[in-house]
Picture 1 (cartoon, rainbow, N blue to C red):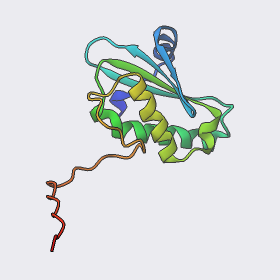
Picture 2: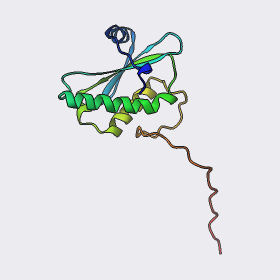
Picture 3: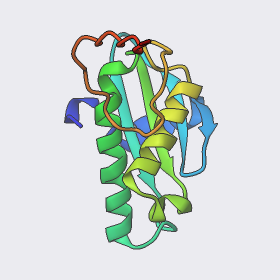
Picture 4: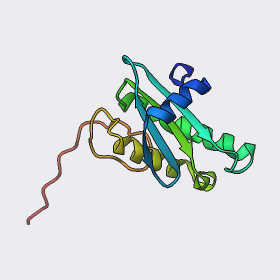
Length: 138
């Protein structure tokens, strides 16, 4: 995820905590606050209660990567803070991605509310659809 999208200052996190709306899920909590203009900022918080430093940094890396893949599909003009729960320490990349996409849908932050793959994986463009062959009747 590019640095231009990151919340960095403590006062920015505090503003989102105070004024934002919260959405809970199994592995994380999302706090959303409307931002001025078309900026899009995001921060990640992992408490010291979540494993050791290696585990916390792993969880942050996985959450950042999952969000990076979602950014092109998200509405602009929001500040987001993802707070990892204890269960995130043992979660896989795809579980965290599923949880993140669920929260982003719940907060109505996707540009389109199309069908969700649910696995947090990036959807690839396919070629033109092939026509179905009619069954042989002979």
